[in-house]
Image (cartoon, rainbow, N blue to C red; front, side, top):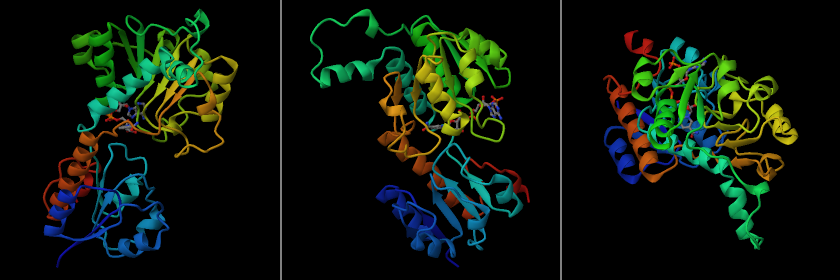
Length: 325
Ligand code: NAP
């Protein structure tokens, strides 16, 4: 029997053709909601899912009686009920490594733009308001030579820290990660307790996955612990932060500035105050959004689903237990 796959995010024509050689494919790249009737119809027959950015709930799994494998086009898997998938024997795969460097570039983009106030000052020109040399009220802060505090020091965290240490001569602190002796040797990273890092860092950059333990890891208490003048950068997930508390801290000056690629609710609501704040650089979740990297991520998902549905080991399984069962 030819297995059926539901692809609910855009992949290249070549990748789609490759999948069609082995499987019957329902291609619905513009699916905006899991309530979409075409999505639900295809789900009812699917042995495999390929996509991202939709929350797959246990209730939805009840409507997918044939499902064997999900190949997410993302490294983060907070949109999936992993324990429930494992209980049902459904394999989940993700796309680590291929997006690490691009996401770290985005982290550094936000560090530079936030500390140097690049977007705010570019806007001055766009609006025709550059009429004289800018005064000290519009100066930014140095990035080189400062202290970068990484909250999470996995693949992406290490890649951001490496840029900071080797490219910008920054002192690197890290927390919320197991000891990394290899990174301590490579660029002198130092492990700190969370509160100590908050007190010492000029720039705090978050790269932990969203989980029950990391949800709202940052709130009023943590922003108050940060150094005056320090910048907060989030390239992880919006829900790692208590967004209301962050908005308040940015408004009353407790938090100097923030560079944000991710938000509690995405797309960001039109009435969110964040984009209007001069001390905020907000990007529309573009961590991995380059042609090269999105193609590589889709390719990894295609490879994962082909291998898994053929009964072979995929490249990047999340819930390995299913393979042993
Ligand atoms: P990773 O290699 O697994 O690194 C995660 C880091 O967080 C590790 O240092 C890990 O500690 C630490 N950590 C894990 N669970 C934790 C917990 N419960 N509490 C505190 N720290 C914890 O993952 P990655 O590839 O770097 O990706 C990290 C996250 O970035 C993804 O999960 C995703 O949400 C986000 N991301 C965002 C974008 C974007 O577009 N903005 C793009 C890609 C990824 P250990 O070192 O001890 O394991």
